[in-house]
Length: 199
Image (cartoon, rainbow, N blue to C red; front, side):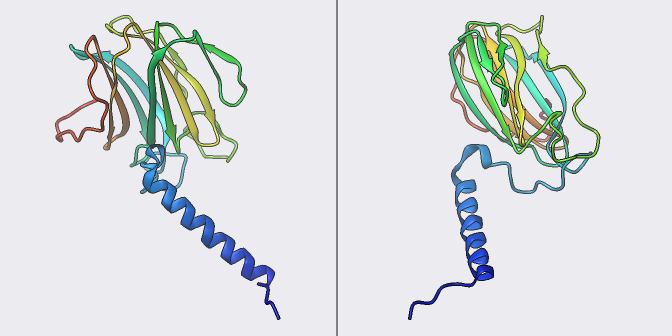
C-alpha cells in the first residue's frame, strides 16, 4: 500500500526543500551575496535601511555612495552601462521616472529598503532626496530612485559616457559604493579596500 505523508509531514518536507533551494540560490546569485549577517530591520546597527546618498568627484572617477543603517550592506547587482531610453519604470507602479544622461547604469540592492514600510519597520526610515543632479561630477549626470518594494531597492545612474562601474561593499558604516570612471572603461569587480578607504 502506498504511504502518503501526513499534512504536518508534507509541510516540513516543503520547508526543507525551500530552505535548500534558497541556500543554493544565495551562493550563486550576485544580488544575494549580501544576505548573510543581516539582522532585524529598521534601525541603527540592525539592518539594510537606506540612511544617506552621497555623490562626488574623486579626480578620475565619480563616486556614488549608498549608506545604510545596520552592520551589513545589502547585496548589489549592476546592469549596464547602456543607452539611456530616457526613463525607467518605477517598481512597483511602472510610472516612468525620467533619467538624464546619454548612458544608464541600474543599481539593484537587496535586501534593502528606503521608505517602503509594508512590514511595519520601526523608524528611522530614509528621509532624504530620491533624485540628485550633481554639479561637480565629470560623468554622472543624475542619480534617481527607481524602485523601493518588498526589500528590493533600485536606483538609476545617468551618465555622459558609458564607462564600466566598480562596486565596493563596505562596513563601518555599511555602504554600497559605486565608482564611475570619467572616460576610460575599467573592469567591474568588487574590490577589497584598506581600512583607510573612505566613501
